[in-house]
Length: 377
Ligand code: NAD
Image (cartoon, rainbow, N blue to C red; front, top):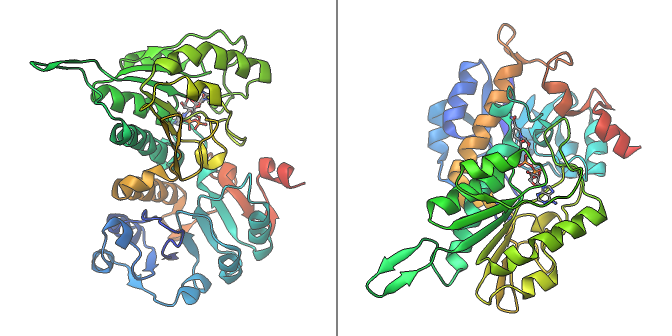
């Protein structure tokens, strides 16, 4: 099967979907790999590394799309790119299917089998394909480095003849994959860390990383069967805001990672909470791009409110693009390998497979994913 890998064109995107090491593995499955020249440059991988691994080069981007049987990507395609894809082609990438109605319809009409990396179930077996987790893990790490870079003080305690510096206080809101990595990173740098999440099961994980879990009684919260947080009622959100006010006012760094799958992130840090923080404090709002957990944060910008720096930088894994590419590439390969038919050397679209049907959005001219179908109707 011919697998085509075009360059990422999103402005500033340095991550790449497939690294040379993965090309080798795909070739061993019996696939033919063709890449667009310059594919890996953003993450420091030269064309020669890809060709040595077994890939061919196709400089004509339109031809690359038109002759593809499988397209492996990081970002969602544009409508123009969809129009280039042959009917029956399999496209695997992030798709943002909850928000991209026009794109989903275009993929359906084109007869493309579109697989969304966001829709890989969060089960133990699919962990190796879970790009949301691999990228969130790195994003959590980056939030702490960004905060440390902007903070006018250090994170660890330091006892010197010139005096003793107290450890910085870090508050992490949302202790999922990114939040837990932020806690671990801040602890490694010597900070004193407190965290809160609405899923009570998380308390033990926070404590095992050396953090303190902020206890807030919100009544019924819990998680969905998929392990995601349930959306809070407006009353619960207000209760949470009041209960965390004091901790935020005393923190040098606040990192917010709270998300509710398929919905806008909740606003948890209000303007008055920002204003109550000491000048020089730093907030990193990981949700800024999708609406924000912090009032006043701006997507992909760093702003100052009353002397408090609020960082809304988007695409945090891109700051460590080489490792992010390695992980994403590995997630993609693990998915392909899991559904690859070794006899026919084809990617088998099998609706009896335990993972695949949940992440196929369109197939054979239909929107096959029930959740997305309901949103579109
Ligand atoms: P996410 O990005 O959807 O959300 C981030 C965090 O925000 C979650 O922990 C959520 O509980 C929290 N949150 C939501 N509303 C909040 C609020 N008002 N205040 C504070 N926190 C709030 O989630 P994620 O990090 O991608 O993953 C969530 C969970 O899914 C994981 O922690 C885990 O339980 C599960 N998961 C399981 C596997 C697996 O078993 N293979 C893999 C990945 C994730």
